[in-house]
Structure formats: C-alpha cells, structure tokens
Length: 155
Image (tube, rainbow, N blue to C red; front, side, top):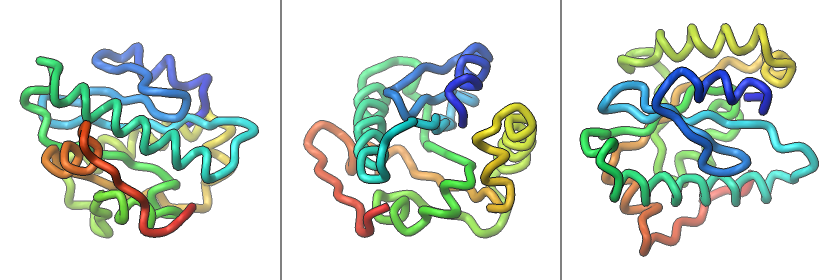
C-alpha cells in the first residue's frame, strides 16, 4: 500500500509501523493484519530484508506485549501475496486459494477501497489479491529471537 495511505490505516485503531515496509493493525483480539508500504528506490532483495526484519519486530511484540496475548494469527491480503507466494510459503505463511478464511471478505472490501485511493495499488489491479496467514507458533518459531529464516526462493 502506498505510504500516503498508511496513516489512514493506522489511525483506525490498534496499529503501528514496524519498519519502512511493514505496518500492522490488530483487527480483533485474534488477528494481526499486515500492511505493505511502497519503498521507492529499493530492490527486491532489500524489500525482502525489510519484510523479514518487520516480522522479527512483530514476533518480539507478540511475545512480550499484553495486547497480543490472544493473537493467534498474522494475515495479509495483497497482490504481493499472489505474485510472491513461493517466497511467503518459504517464510512460513500459508496461502489460501479459496476465500474461506473468516477475514477474507472484510479484508477484500478494505483492499478494494484502498485501490481506489492508491496509485500504487491501481498499478497492480490486474493481479488478483490472495490471502496469506501464519499462526502465532510459526511466527514465534521462525522470527522469534533465536530464529534464522531464509526464504526458499528469492524475490
């Protein structure tokens, strides 16, 4: 999502910036929704590094902050999930081809609204967004303080 849109997302409530690329909102007590910002003048390897660093920051927060005590999943709906599915799977995400996830309809509605306001998202309008999700245990195992996860495929 475009950087200009990010403050609108975070202003909705329980959210914050993790780094230049990633932010999150606590959609409900159980679900942390990731949001991706555009980083100008960065290559794919640098964005992958920001992505994994952001997940490490999030894992530390999930492990230590009270507001995450009931959070049991991290979800993300984006064109980037579709385009970079093998990388996300390598990091521990599951990609749902069907739309059965309880947050899918809600996230898709928000995504469609953001697409109207964001030139970045409009550029990727021809790529159908997909949903990626990771459970709490996988996040902590793969990105907690002792974790060292390398993607199986490079962006």
